Image 1 (cartoon, rainbow, N blue to C red):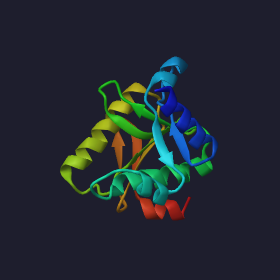
Image 2: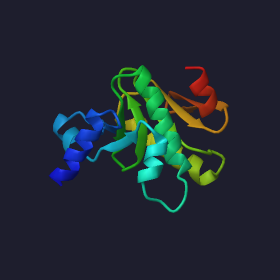
Image 3: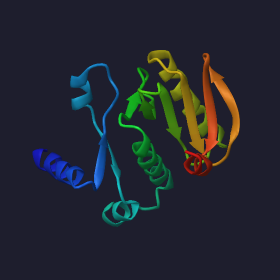
Image 4: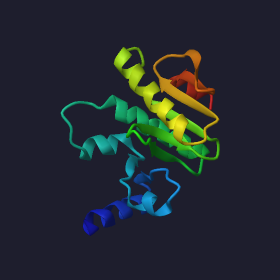
Length: 158
């Protein structure tokens, strides 16, 4: 286990990968919780990673992380009390960000909105953003505005 952590630390120190901590009020829980890893070069991750098919959703999430990292110093992921994962939480903005390749499927839409609704109940949030393939009308979850934006447009207009 220490060897793996050492290798990840080496890659992080050389700016090949970035680790993302879980957002928690307890720093100790943040440190012991699993970390998400994002790569500076998606070609490198595809070359050394293992998979049976292209994981476009993960690559899209990686792209959004790299864009957020240019603008924000503090970025976390969040797991709700019910166990739903929020891709990114920006505490300075009090904003949740979910990334999904396509939001059209009812199962996907329900999953993303359920996670956001649960997160809104457990942490202080001013707004939420869902990045997907197309713009849609904004939603309201328990008084919190949720913008649904095209990832491509969001990247161009940041």
